[in-house]
Length: 250
Image (cartoon, rainbow, N blue to C red; front, top):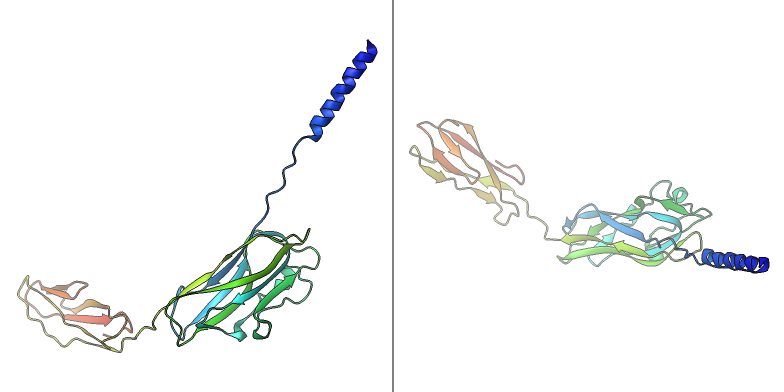
Protein backbone atom coordinates (compact mmCIF):
# COMPACT_ATOMS: atom_id res chain seq x y z
CA UNK A 1 0.00 0.00 0.00
CA UNK A 2 2.82 2.40 0.94
CA UNK A 3 4.59 1.58 -2.29
CA UNK A 4 1.46 2.46 -4.21
CA UNK A 5 1.10 5.81 -2.40
CA UNK A 6 4.76 6.65 -3.06
CA UNK A 7 4.30 5.75 -6.73
CA UNK A 8 1.25 8.00 -7.01
CA UNK A 9 3.12 10.88 -5.35
CA UNK A 10 6.08 10.47 -7.70
CA UNK A 11 3.71 10.51 -10.68
CA UNK A 12 2.14 13.74 -9.41
CA UNK A 13 5.58 15.34 -8.98
CA UNK A 14 6.54 14.36 -12.54
CA UNK A 15 3.28 15.80 -13.90
CA UNK A 16 3.78 19.06 -12.03
CA UNK A 17 7.34 19.29 -13.37
CA UNK A 18 6.07 18.81 -16.90
CA UNK A 19 3.45 21.52 -16.38
CA UNK A 20 6.09 23.90 -15.04
CA UNK A 21 8.38 23.41 -18.04
CA UNK A 22 5.48 23.80 -20.46
CA UNK A 23 4.85 27.46 -19.50
CA UNK A 24 5.38 29.51 -22.72
CA UNK A 25 8.11 32.17 -22.85
CA UNK A 26 7.11 35.31 -24.75
CA UNK A 27 9.88 37.16 -26.61
CA UNK A 28 10.18 40.93 -26.21
CA UNK A 29 8.66 42.83 -29.12
CA UNK A 30 11.09 43.56 -31.95
CA UNK A 31 12.18 47.20 -32.07
CA UNK A 32 12.05 49.43 -35.12
CA UNK A 33 14.18 52.51 -35.63
CA UNK A 34 12.95 55.62 -37.45
CA UNK A 35 15.23 57.66 -39.69
CA UNK A 36 13.78 61.18 -39.91
CA UNK A 37 14.84 63.70 -42.55
CA UNK A 38 13.79 67.28 -41.82
CA UNK A 39 13.87 70.51 -43.85
CA UNK A 40 13.59 74.11 -42.65
CA UNK A 41 11.01 74.97 -45.34
CA UNK A 42 8.29 73.22 -47.30
CA UNK A 43 8.45 75.54 -50.32
CA UNK A 44 11.49 76.91 -52.12
CA UNK A 45 12.38 78.68 -55.35
CA UNK A 46 15.35 78.57 -57.75
CA UNK A 47 18.35 80.12 -56.01
CA UNK A 48 17.06 79.36 -52.50
CA UNK A 49 18.96 77.35 -49.89
CA UNK A 50 17.21 74.60 -47.90
CA UNK A 51 18.72 73.36 -44.62
CA UNK A 52 18.29 69.68 -43.77
CA UNK A 53 18.74 67.47 -40.71
CA UNK A 54 18.85 63.70 -40.37
CA UNK A 55 17.82 62.20 -37.02
CA UNK A 56 17.33 58.74 -35.59
CA UNK A 57 14.41 57.93 -33.33
CA UNK A 58 14.31 55.91 -30.12
CA UNK A 59 16.52 52.82 -30.25
CA UNK A 60 18.01 50.25 -27.89
CA UNK A 61 21.64 49.15 -28.22
CA UNK A 62 22.36 50.51 -31.69
CA UNK A 63 25.55 48.91 -32.94
CA UNK A 64 25.90 50.15 -36.48
CA UNK A 65 24.31 52.35 -39.13
CA UNK A 66 25.30 52.87 -42.75
CA UNK A 67 23.48 54.79 -45.49
CA UNK A 68 23.89 57.03 -48.54
CA UNK A 69 22.29 60.45 -49.02
CA UNK A 70 20.07 60.64 -52.09
CA UNK A 71 19.72 64.20 -53.45
CA UNK A 72 17.17 64.60 -56.27
CA UNK A 73 17.92 66.31 -59.59
CA UNK A 74 17.50 70.05 -59.33
CA UNK A 75 19.03 70.29 -55.86
CA UNK A 76 22.78 70.60 -55.24
CA UNK A 77 24.29 69.72 -51.89
CA UNK A 78 26.61 72.35 -50.41
CA UNK A 79 29.65 70.27 -49.47
CA UNK A 80 30.96 72.83 -47.00
CA UNK A 81 27.67 72.69 -45.07
CA UNK A 82 27.84 68.97 -44.24
CA UNK A 83 28.49 68.57 -40.50
CA UNK A 84 28.10 66.23 -37.55
CA UNK A 85 26.75 67.59 -34.25
CA UNK A 86 29.42 68.21 -31.61
CA UNK A 87 30.10 65.17 -29.44
CA UNK A 88 28.17 62.77 -31.67
CA UNK A 89 30.94 60.16 -31.76
CA UNK A 90 30.95 59.99 -27.95
CA UNK A 91 27.15 59.90 -27.79
CA UNK A 92 26.97 56.99 -30.24
CA UNK A 93 29.94 55.18 -28.68
CA UNK A 94 31.65 55.17 -32.07
CA UNK A 95 34.72 52.96 -32.51
CA UNK A 96 36.40 55.73 -34.47
CA UNK A 97 35.67 58.73 -36.62
CA UNK A 98 32.18 58.66 -38.13
CA UNK A 99 32.24 58.61 -41.92
CA UNK A 100 30.21 61.60 -43.05
CA UNK A 101 28.90 62.43 -46.54
CA UNK A 102 31.28 63.88 -49.11
CA UNK A 103 31.36 63.86 -52.90
CA UNK A 104 34.35 61.50 -52.92
CA UNK A 105 32.58 58.82 -50.85
CA UNK A 106 29.26 59.03 -52.66
CA UNK A 107 27.70 60.95 -49.74
CA UNK A 108 27.88 58.02 -47.35
CA UNK A 109 27.28 58.15 -43.57
CA UNK A 110 28.69 55.22 -41.59
CA UNK A 111 29.27 54.29 -37.96
CA UNK A 112 29.83 51.21 -35.79
CA UNK A 113 29.87 50.97 -32.00
CA UNK A 114 32.95 50.46 -29.89
CA UNK A 115 31.56 48.59 -26.86
CA UNK A 116 28.24 49.63 -25.32
CA UNK A 117 26.46 50.95 -28.42
CA UNK A 118 23.83 53.68 -28.30
CA UNK A 119 20.48 53.70 -26.51
CA UNK A 120 18.14 56.69 -26.69
CA UNK A 121 14.49 57.43 -26.00
CA UNK A 122 14.08 60.51 -28.21
CA UNK A 123 15.20 61.84 -31.58
CA UNK A 124 18.93 62.41 -32.03
CA UNK A 125 20.31 64.58 -34.85
CA UNK A 126 23.18 62.76 -36.56
CA UNK A 127 23.78 64.99 -39.61
CA UNK A 128 23.12 68.51 -40.90
CA UNK A 129 23.61 69.83 -44.44
CA UNK A 130 22.20 72.30 -46.96
CA UNK A 131 21.13 72.15 -50.59
CA UNK A 132 20.67 74.95 -53.10
CA UNK A 133 17.83 74.93 -55.63
CA UNK A 134 19.24 75.02 -59.17
CA UNK A 135 18.10 77.78 -61.53
CA UNK A 136 16.68 75.17 -63.94
CA UNK A 137 15.08 73.02 -61.24
CA UNK A 138 11.70 71.65 -62.32
CA UNK A 139 8.71 73.09 -60.48
CA UNK A 140 7.63 70.01 -58.55
CA UNK A 141 7.97 68.29 -55.18
CA UNK A 142 11.52 67.22 -54.38
CA UNK A 143 12.28 64.48 -51.83
CA UNK A 144 15.64 64.23 -50.08
CA UNK A 145 15.98 60.69 -48.75
CA UNK A 146 18.54 57.99 -47.94
CA UNK A 147 19.46 54.57 -49.28
CA UNK A 148 20.04 52.28 -46.31
CA UNK A 149 22.91 49.81 -46.37
CA UNK A 150 22.64 48.29 -42.90
CA UNK A 151 21.48 48.99 -39.35
CA UNK A 152 22.12 46.46 -36.58
CA UNK A 153 22.08 46.10 -32.80
CA UNK A 154 25.11 45.88 -30.52
CA UNK A 155 23.92 42.75 -28.71
CA UNK A 156 23.48 39.96 -31.24
CA UNK A 157 24.42 42.04 -34.31
CA UNK A 158 20.89 41.45 -35.57
CA UNK A 159 19.51 43.71 -38.25
CA UNK A 160 17.08 46.32 -36.88
CA UNK A 161 13.94 47.03 -38.93
CA UNK A 162 13.65 50.69 -39.91
CA UNK A 163 11.39 53.30 -41.47
CA UNK A 164 12.50 56.41 -43.36
CA UNK A 165 10.60 59.70 -43.31
CA UNK A 166 11.61 61.80 -46.31
CA UNK A 167 11.80 65.59 -46.44
CA UNK A 168 9.60 66.99 -49.21
CA UNK A 169 10.06 70.53 -50.52
CA UNK A 170 7.81 71.96 -53.23
CA UNK A 171 9.73 73.94 -55.83
CA UNK A 172 7.76 76.87 -57.26
CA UNK A 173 8.49 79.87 -59.46
CA UNK A 174 10.59 82.55 -57.86
CA UNK A 175 8.28 85.38 -56.75
CA UNK A 176 8.33 88.69 -58.63
CA UNK A 177 8.88 91.50 -56.13
CA UNK A 178 6.80 94.67 -56.01
CA UNK A 179 8.71 97.77 -57.10
CA UNK A 180 6.15 100.50 -56.45
CA UNK A 181 2.52 101.62 -56.26
CA UNK A 182 0.41 104.27 -58.01
CA UNK A 183 -2.73 105.94 -56.60
CA UNK A 184 -3.42 109.17 -58.47
CA UNK A 185 -7.03 109.81 -57.70
CA UNK A 186 -9.23 112.31 -55.88
CA UNK A 187 -12.69 111.06 -54.94
CA UNK A 188 -15.68 113.34 -54.52
CA UNK A 189 -18.45 111.72 -52.48
CA UNK A 190 -21.89 112.54 -51.22
CA UNK A 191 -22.81 111.50 -47.68
CA UNK A 192 -23.52 107.78 -47.77
CA UNK A 193 -22.03 107.39 -51.26
CA UNK A 194 -19.24 104.84 -51.86
CA UNK A 195 -16.50 104.53 -54.47
CA UNK A 196 -13.53 102.18 -54.82
CA UNK A 197 -10.00 103.60 -55.11
CA UNK A 198 -8.04 102.66 -58.23
CA UNK A 199 -4.65 101.22 -57.22
CA UNK A 200 -1.86 100.13 -59.59
CA UNK A 201 0.87 97.86 -58.18
CA UNK A 202 4.08 97.61 -60.22
CA UNK A 203 5.28 95.57 -61.98
CA UNK A 204 2.17 94.15 -63.57
CA UNK A 205 3.36 90.55 -62.98
CA UNK A 206 4.21 91.07 -59.29
CA UNK A 207 3.48 87.91 -57.31
CA UNK A 208 1.89 89.55 -54.28
CA UNK A 209 -0.20 92.58 -55.30
CA UNK A 210 -2.11 92.81 -52.02
CA UNK A 211 -2.42 96.25 -50.42
CA UNK A 212 -3.65 97.71 -47.11
CA UNK A 213 -5.79 100.85 -46.71
CA UNK A 214 -5.72 103.29 -43.80
CA UNK A 215 -7.07 106.77 -43.10
CA UNK A 216 -4.27 109.16 -42.16
CA UNK A 217 -6.41 112.33 -41.85
CA UNK A 218 -10.11 113.12 -41.57
CA UNK A 219 -11.30 109.78 -40.24
CA UNK A 220 -14.52 111.47 -39.09
CA UNK A 221 -15.46 112.26 -42.72
CA UNK A 222 -15.07 108.85 -44.41
CA UNK A 223 -14.69 105.13 -43.87
CA UNK A 224 -12.57 102.75 -45.96
CA UNK A 225 -12.72 98.95 -46.01
CA UNK A 226 -10.11 96.28 -46.84
CA UNK A 227 -11.04 96.41 -50.53
CA UNK A 228 -10.49 100.16 -50.90
CA UNK A 229 -14.17 101.10 -50.86
CA UNK A 230 -14.44 104.64 -49.48
CA UNK A 231 -17.78 105.83 -48.06
CA UNK A 232 -18.67 109.46 -47.26
CA UNK A 233 -19.83 110.10 -43.69
CA UNK A 234 -20.13 113.89 -43.60
CA UNK A 235 -18.74 116.97 -45.29
CA UNK A 236 -14.98 117.36 -45.03
CA UNK A 237 -11.64 116.34 -46.52
CA UNK A 238 -9.80 113.09 -45.73
CA UNK A 239 -6.65 111.30 -46.84
CA UNK A 240 -6.34 107.55 -47.46
CA UNK A 241 -2.95 105.80 -47.42
CA UNK A 242 -2.43 102.69 -49.53
CA UNK A 243 0.51 100.38 -48.67
CA UNK A 244 1.74 97.26 -50.47
CA UNK A 245 2.10 94.09 -48.41
CA UNK A 246 5.22 93.18 -50.37
CA UNK A 247 7.87 95.87 -50.07
CA UNK A 248 5.84 98.26 -47.91
CA UNK A 249 5.50 100.81 -50.73
CA UNK A 250 2.85 103.47 -50.07
